[in-house]
Length: 238
Image (cartoon, rainbow, N blue to C red; front, side, top):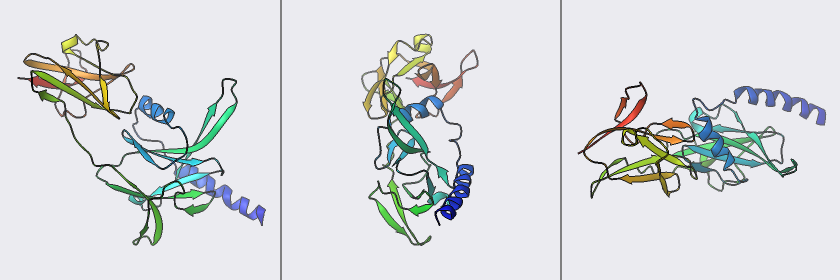
């Protein structure tokens, strides 16, 4: 009987591995920093643009399926190990990183643990999906509060950036001659960075920087190209 069970698990693992996919067009620096901030097993949580799911390493395989895919596509969890200074493994757990879906306030999901379909033992938020006829775990996304880069009183321009928490986010643009090491933004809330500058009236191009990577201001729809052909955010100060 045990041999038959093992034979059934092998094709399931192969199918799950084939169904698992990498996160499309991800910022690898941001993704790896998100993984590095996972400290252990617990209920799912939102970290910037990613939802983090975790599971203990008490099984051989953990997969996850979502309601917005009809509970049909299996995504495999990955294994994370922590190490001592001597190189010995000190702890292990499974994790899955989901890019935050657009236009969804609630995500329902189920786990597959060594071939057994179940709800998430680490998430007390559960419900019955009447359409699918199954019990599911639920993750409720916090409401989105949009605060854009904009002019504020007293002649200041407020730059706002949303990024994973605990980062060093810098600001550079035509007002710094594209030197990105002059201004470092302040994390005023978890994952929200802000900086107020007293800019005179004019048109300015700028970008945010994380390490050696530059990226545009997602809170500002105005974009343009610098003389050397780089895309940059644009703001007019009046």
